[in-house]
Image (cartoon, rainbow, N blue to C red; front, side):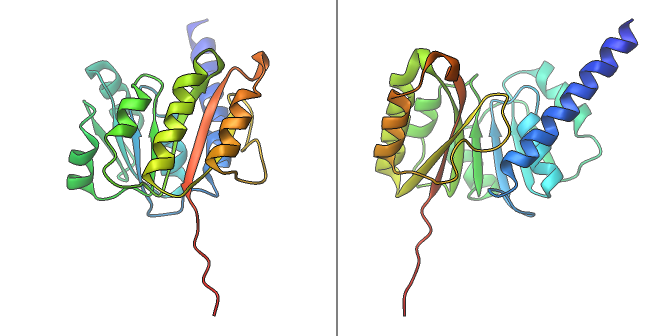
Length: 197
């Protein structure tokens, strides 16, 4: 019985990993530097590592660290930390990230306030019962750089919209969320500058 449950859990995690890889395939490239902050399971990190990114997993406790080290033991492109350093310390040690995910286990707003420069792209969780905090996060990013936004519903493949939107557009979308859209992830990326000759 225990083996059956373990196999079921392993299959579920593999399915989740494939869905996450599909979600990130257009945002992360091989050799990208990615921070997974506050992670406990490494689902995002697993997807990034499969793409070929260089991943820094920063977890908050020793139990999660041990699980993650076991999970990524055979992947030399994943580094596991047993604490979540300040963003400035991570950048000083590893460089500027191409992508950063902030876990729901962290205070997203406080983490974004630590950004001393705009990251290329990042994601963080939202929940409709606390949309004010999510909107505050969008506002902080709006002040940090020229970001465009998208979102993904938890448990559903891919980004919710084919088109990215402005910070004002994202705030409007958030205000319109209904109860069945109660949780998911907000994505932000710096706008690509197009030069004309």
